[in-house]
Every structure is written in structure tokens, then in C-alpha cells.
Image (cartoon, rainbow, N blue to C red; front, side):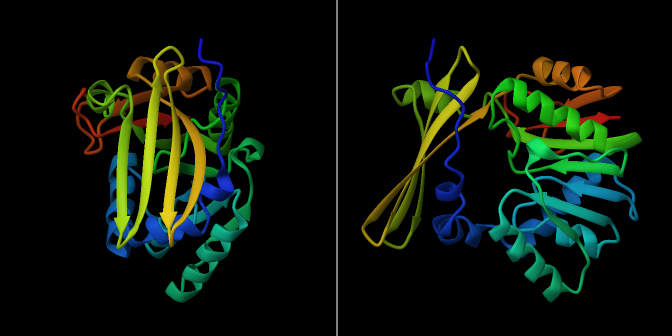
Length: 253
């Protein structure tokens, strides 16, 4: 049994190095496209009350607000929320941003829809993550929909098998580099990872872990959380297969 426990170095993982290495790729065009995907995959109607949790720095929430959704965005990171509010102001949109940890969400039948995007679920132990899923369910009105976007559990396995049981991603910015090293604990169905950022000759290590789900497993979690119906699909809304890049789950309250 792997003795490691779920853990995330939040401040290092989403600090200044995140802004430097990751933000340049999260363009307004990408955010617009992903917001469109959310609306299409979730079947969201304009004018809905929508929860974006976690909302990060607001790149989807602000776009959705510009399209007529009444959006509440929650996140644990005050720095991200400040960035989100500043962008909302520059775009001339209204989003209700709140400093809330997913583990402390206490909404009750307040939303027509909710989204969790960009592999933002599965960072805690199973008991805690199941509780978070129940909190998403309680946030929805009857018939409300929750769209969950996650990595496919099969995506990195060929790389893991070919590279001494590790998957490695490398991102360069000039002479600087971010190296993401992931090891899959098959028994726990969880990736344990370490992200090394090398910037101006300074090395910063950030450790994190994230749960991987097969389709039957995540559907059982949704049923146990109280969703009346749930289905899986790939990132296009088509059939989920071993070749799918993402595992999408749409649950109905």
C-alpha cells in the first residue's frame, strides 16, 4: 500500500510561477471556446443562475456573465479572486465572487447549473471529495445540472508504462522551465505529482495529488451524492472511450 496521502502545495502550485508559466496559454480565445463548450455540453440556457466552483481567476465566469448568465464564482485563493474582479470590471460584467473553500460550500437550491472545469476535482481524500460532490448537488435546484471536467484515467498510461512508471510534461518559457512529474498509484487510482519550476536559476518544488476515475466509479459517486441521473461523455459530447482526452460528467439534480 502506498503510504502517501492526498496533498496539494496550493501556494507554490498557484503562485507567481503559475502566472509566468501557465497564464500565457490561457488566452481569452481559449476561455471563450471553453465557455461555449460548457454551455453546449451542459445544455445551459442563457439567464440561468450558475455556480462556477472553483472559479480561479475568473476566466470562464466573466465570459459566461457576458453571455447573460447570473454567475457566482467561488475560490479559496484571494489572489485569484482579486484578478477575477479586476477582469470583470474591465469587461463591464457583474459576477458575484466569494472567498469560499469547496469543502465549506453551503449553498442550498440556489442554482440552475454548476460547473467544475480544468481538472479541479479530486484533490482531497475520498471521504472529503464525496462530501464536496454532495455540496454541489445541494447547491442545485430540482432539475439543475452539474458539469464536471476531468482528465481521462487512460490518458497518461502509455507514457507511464514507457517512462519508468512516470509521466513527464515539460513547459519552456525562454531559458526557464516547468517540469511536471506524475506517478500513478494504481491501487489508489491517484496520481502523485511534483512540479519543478526552474526560473532565473531558482528551483521551486510543488507537490500535489489528484484522483483518477473510471466511468462506472464516478457515476456511482454521483448517484451516492444524490443526483437523479448522470452520464459520461468525452470532451466533444460524444462517447467516452480509452482514446478520449477528457472525462466529462453531466449530473442532474
